[in-house]
Length: 201
Image 1 (cartoon, rainbow, N blue to C red):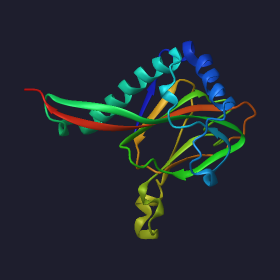
Image 2 (cartoon, rainbow, N blue to C red):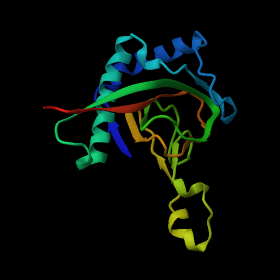
Image 3 (cartoon, helix red, strand yellow):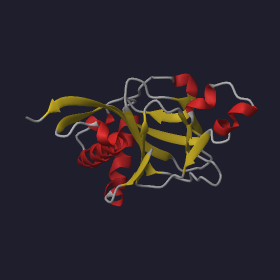
């Protein structure tokens, strides 16, 4: 997992919020997995295709950050001179109201995913309000004293902060805990695929 901070977050924060609200006003929703989330708006899955300049500035930075994370994770596994492409094939925003949450899930058909905190509202790690919790893949496995080494570190909460972005393998189970604040919590999220274009001659 990787954590990045956008140095232009403050500059584009308000405009990104307005774009999220514009999508919500148009009732552009994903309609996906509606039974595992409540009190939150989820846009359709092409949010980062919006031509708004703030969205496009964010997309440029976000793509570069995820590419950096994947390159670091793979280190020597990528061939020298490899032409690696990144495709942000799904993206959306969440506007979470008081009491809103998203149960544990993964992001299928992708290799890397990211969550960017536009406005955390009153989210806080100290109260476990509106935090993204990541679970070990061991979570769904059989547990007894013999597997304590895994179960004692079965999850981690990411401290939310405006302008920060957590990048993680798409297969990693995670959730958004119930949000206890009064002001909306707003995040952007997206999924990526990587394409190996071979090596330069």
